[in-house]
Structures are given as C-alpha cells and as structure tokens.
Amino acid sequence: MDNDFFVHESSIIDDDVVIGHGTKIWHFCHILRGCRLGSNCVIGQNVMIGPDVIIGSGCKIQNNVSIYKGIELEDDVFCGPSMVFTNVVNPRSFIERKNEFKKTLVKKGASIGANATIVCGNTIGSYALIGAGAVVTKDVPDYALFTGVPARRTGWVCKCGNILKNDNDSVLRCMCGNTYRKANGTLTPID
Image (cartoon, rainbow, N blue to C red; front, top):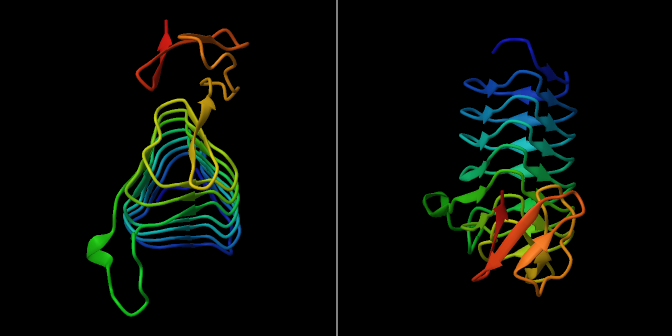
C-alpha cells in the first residue's frame, strides 16, 4: 500500500488490500483481505468491509455499516448510517452457509438511507434512492425512489437526488434542468 490515503490508528487493514488515492478510513474500522477500495472514498467509524469486496471511487460509507463478501459498490455510492446488507437468505447459526452467499450490486450513484436493509441477491440501480428504514427485497430500477417495508417504488429521483414531480407524465423534468422519459416501468435520461 502506498501512503496517499488516510487510515486512523485504531483501524485494522489486513494484507492484500488496495486503497485508492485520497480515501479516508476513520476510527475502529476493519478492512479484510482482498478488498479493493477506490479513490476518494470516506469510510466512517466502525465500518467492516469483508474479504474480496470491491468498492468504487467516490463512495461514502457512514458509521456502523458492514459490507460482506459478495457485495459490490460501484462509483459514488452512499451508504447511510447503520444501514444493513445481508449475504444469506435464510441464516442459521448452527448451519454454515458460506457457499450460499448471494451477490448484491449497488450501481453508480445510488444512495441508501440510514437504517435501511438490503436483502442479498438484489441489484440497486444507478442513481436510485432507498429511503431511511426501507427493507429492499427485490431489484430496484435506475432512478427509482424505494421506501417502506417491504420497499416499493414510490417515485422517481433525478441524478442530482431531487424527487421528480408529475409522476404520471411520460416526460419528467427536474428543477436542475435534467429531463427523463418514463416508459414500461423504467426511467431514462433524455440528452
């Protein structure tokens, strides 16, 4: 490892970990072997990143988050305080199920609110927004706003994070100037 990143002295970094330029790892974290963290990430207090996890550049992982083997975060993902990822669908303490870990992908620019739970085996789409406390049990489309327990789509969000109004229209415009076309349960940007 080179030294163009910051690791607080209370954190533990295992062997064979790659940490990108400008990344900051704060108090009481444990980064396990084989992890790859991109550049300019912020890893909050008491975060555990499991073995062989891939985290893109520009990610912000807030306090008390565990990212287990099989989870991948693309660039610019936000994980709110104490949000939860799982990696086994039906855990039992007396049955080892490491061979049953399910992959979870969080795509570029997605944000997951505080205390939300992402059940393994699902994909969170690009720039999607998961509300605080939501429990995600299925794939989330790009730009979707998912809230509730179990979480369901309750709106659409712009790349900038604003909730898009006039959800019944086929073309949605954000106050930032971005425009989107809605069709067949998906939202795509219009250039």
